[in-house]
Image (cartoon, rainbow, N blue to C red):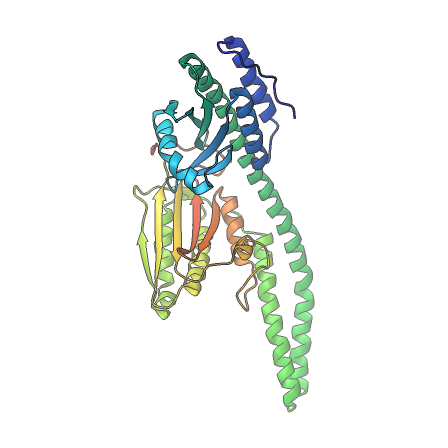
Amino acid sequence: MSAPSIHSEVGRSQTSSERQVLDAAIALAPTISLERVLNEAAQQIRHVAMCDAVAISVLDTGLGRFELVHSVGFDEERESLTTSLTPTWQRALNEFAPVERDLPHAKEITVPMTSGDVRGAVTVIVSRTDSTRVQELEQIVGSVASQVASAIERAEVVNRLTNKRRLEAIGEVSAGIARELRNPLFGISSAAQLLRFRVRDDPVIEKNVGRILREVERLNAVVSSLLEYGSPAPLRVVSADPDAIWHGVLMSKRGLLESKALVARYRAAEPRIMCDVDPEQIAHVFSHVLSNAADAAPEGSDLTLTSTTLPRGAWRCRLQNDGLPIAPELLSRVFELFFTTKPGSSGLGLALCQRILDEHGGSITLESTADAGTTVTITLPHRKLDGTAIADTHD
């Protein structure tokens, strides 16, 4: 993918600048991979603006913080660069206008970047130049940033659709396997019970028959989980308060929490909102993640559950426990089918939770560190499941 040809004259015509932006937009248009979007965006910005460094950030509206998603040309470490640029990114986005800052031998220009739900900022470092050139650079970078935000939004949509289709394909295979296993398991169970009836006085046979039946019971549970994952019940969508669903789950799990002397510190979203959800399926998700958190939490510790209403009206909750951190190589696999670190578990629980939330247009993620324990984050959109937007009153 070739970049447009750029000349260095100051005071070039507006038509030439518009052509640069158009070339950048065309170059970015077919991009699908988010990583490719960001790499291409940085190259295009450096080329059209003739800048020494580029930083692209995206705002996580739920956490209220910026994430540095791509940078090139900076000497600072990622964390240090994020800390130093965050106030400028915030100002550019709040004022929705470019922000300039003089550096010892250069000028820093930051422009806001928005498209749909994507909000962020782009910062470039250029050599000292006159005000006319600065204004031209602000316009060029701002226009390309708008195309970058659109490309990021498209990439996220494509990734969501791809993931949904992948889960549907996995579900179909899982359901097929489950149906094929059900009849043989029934036959094994029947034969074992018949053997137990025929040979009652042999302790060795009794012991092994018991083992067979226990394994059949375990495999039947796996089959049931596979069928639930592969052939989920149709959504029965109503308008419901996710925090009210959480309250019901906490009440139903009181015995589990008390058995480990756990205290669930819960703060509901303000203002409360209604989402289009299947309350029974969402309650299943909440119940599963709460059980996992309780299992991982040290006895006598606290579980922290906090819900928030996001700026564009979506709902998000974060459930945190102080248990041992999940190793990075395991964390990346927690939503895989059959992956589990718990003895006796089928490894289908989180995969099913992910599928339920995906069908709701929501998401579930896990973070785990030695300092903060493990946090599960669940997001539900404030919109109808057919894609029709609900009026956003929280911006």
